[in-house]
Image (cartoon, rainbow, N blue to C red):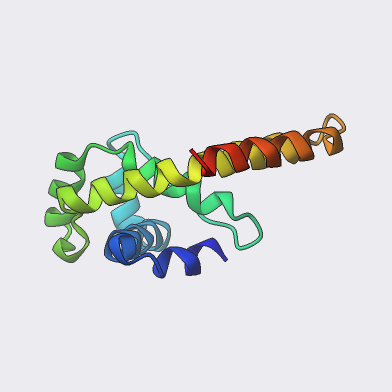
Length: 132
């Protein structure tokens, strides 16, 4: 699972852990969700069957206003989940690394068209990006 693999990346372990806990609390606590969504933001839940749901969730966290998120976490007594600037940077780096794989997944999993012809070009493109 991608989430398990992200826990093995030393530089991002703390940031990913905080992001995961933040998303879990958001989906479990109606009070926290109401405070969070009052700002017009939401975090998608992850699905164990879709690796890219973790990517989408991390990308959504990276797009949040760090100052507002920190203030909300302080107001709700969840200071332990405040992402430091370095942790936000680590999440952005993870999102950047996973981005080509998410794009390749989207190309190869089309429902309205035949995608088997995309598999080899997608793999070759990923291989080129990894060797740059």
